[in-house]
Length: 603
Image 1 (cartoon, rainbow, N blue to C red):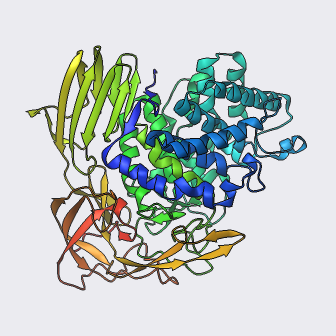
Image 2 (image 1 turned 60 degrees about the horizontal axis):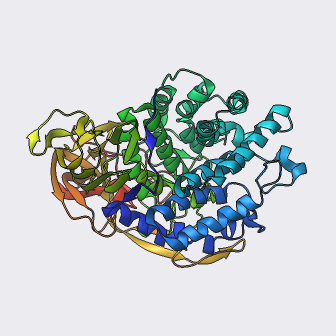
Image 3 (image 1 turned 120 degrees about the vertical axis):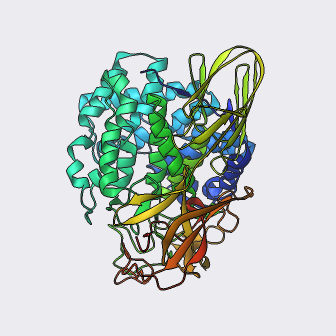
């Protein structure tokens, strides 16, 4: 199974609304975290005294491609400052993590796996060949320590063993040495096998466990795809079997899973951790690249255009730890929080509203998506995700102008000094497909592009529909966009210092207090679509790129006892308590307070 290869930030650049989204990220928390957050600013990774495990590698994993995609010289200089400090501290035997030699056996080597993944991203973006030697030394040392029994996989490293293969695959491509395959086998032997634990995914639990931890599971989905080649195994699409099982018992309308730390069932008022969203996106990017199966690209779009923007403030200076599909307020809950194991501030917005992992890790979401629109193998280039971008690949330039997913029209401008094959992935929901004004079959399009200039215009339609959700609820979807009743809100800002970490505007904490009704059901299935222009804030609740009007009525929905800001799993009653109202729903990703899963009344 020959994989699609990603392009690097030297060859692929974002344009249009996507570039604006990356700029917002750079101007927000991602681009400033090293200035304001001690765990990054003063990390042990660069000689400081703060956290020396996952947070700097997590942050760099997104900050590096963000800097290079935007060609921001100040950010690139910051990247090099951190990478130089990390590399200069590498020990003679290859060990690189900030841990004393006598403590290696008790140091969770998830950090080894993660820093290698991050250095791989840096190599792709910078082209610095010396980094390959650094990665080789790290992993050869890791192999020697594991092979000798001086260290073993445990805790996070045991449950995330497959993450090492992002670097291992690159290394084997450059240096096809036997020890790399041997290390691959050791990692799998000592790593956790998630196929043995699916029964534990059926029912929500209030006990924290590694095997039901939502982020571990989001990462795990790509395990077979990234590891089977080095392990010499046949690919069997375990990810599809496991994803189907997870969706049955813990699925969400945006096609992720509930997990406010651990898997949390089918309640749309339960939370999904932000780390899980970006890790599931990365898993789907890798799954599409390794398998070429369109289902992974389509599922990636659902997460990227819905779950990711919805759990960040519009200026990207604050984020949630967990988001809710039905989220009527973001306020501190009671001491005994409604989540599986998270605390009472987990769904408020802020610098670090629960654990700091999401503060560091959310940064990879948009930049890695921006590296996914075009991929290649042999003499073929595929447009895998229809995002406004420019590809410059050794004499082939492809410029894609589009406002997808908000509008389903794509214009490709191609200049080539050689012939090549060009594939355009057409989403399964596309209808009335037209290619250069002519009707076409709804399936992937393949073109033999000749040397010179070529233009291709693609257009299709998508139909809004109510997709069935558990408990007799429904979610409105059109294309890769979910739609929600937006709930207007008032922000309550909170500035303070805790454990030496300052929260002040614009990176302070916020609670969102609802100011409009949320207790609705669908009166019928008639929908009216309105397309707007995409503003400078692509996912804006006040200026959404499109809306859908629906006939709705208020019902007695009720609150989840004993909470005052969490709605019930299902309505108390579906009997209307108001006349029919025309409600303008907007994309889920544009909302911060919302109702998404709702009943059809008088059904």
